[in-house]
Length: 310
Image 1: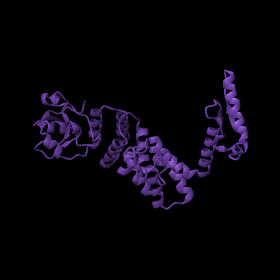
Image 2: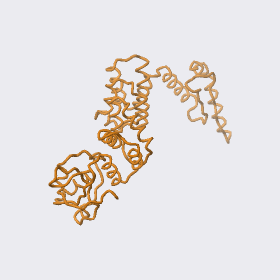
Image 3: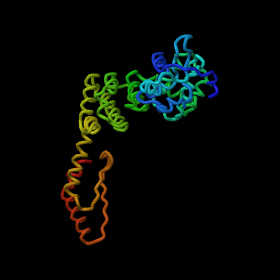
């Protein structure tokens, strides 16, 4: 790394961890660990820091997980090297150390963007280099971060927690703040809903809220009730499409009672918007044909009940 051309000096892990944690933005729960034996033997690249012992506070730029690892192992010093006191340059170096383009979480990307913005006006070439290290282009990185900034705070927090994706947050941003804020609540997170289920859940909730003009508290109660149910999406779908769900349930009853075990496939038009049902079956023996024919007789006997669904 061409910027790391200063002489190496040593700093204690305690001193590194007691300084500013401005750059501690990468995967706080984990992070890159070097390995205790490598740390003992000095087989690692010097940790980049801003400042120098005896000349003011020292700020660690990258390697927080590894420094914690060294502190836990009782190491007295770590090799460090000074870098320019410039946020943009420091972030570039930290990203170079991370070496995982395309694998940064939304929270990491947004924290990095905030650091860039807080430091100084963001030059185009800096954004281009940062975007490249993130595995993106300058335009794509900037555009994505501006989309983050346009979100309501509660929706943005849910995306940063990786509870919902950015598109879902944008689509459902008009939901009451109470609902968006609850997406980051431990009770919601413990439900363990997939991105797909959450997307469907919030889309249905938004439609119900707009259609029924629910008060924010009632909207939140509806969301809480859905998440507490064994089938959250089905719970809200029944509320969103009560008549359609009733027809689907009735059709399933009729299909089971008339064709179960017969080999006949009976299907209704999508959303029951049509004027005909569809039958499909195959047979390769007389016995199979007999079962198919019996199913058709059962359908015919209950023809009016089927027709009422259309």
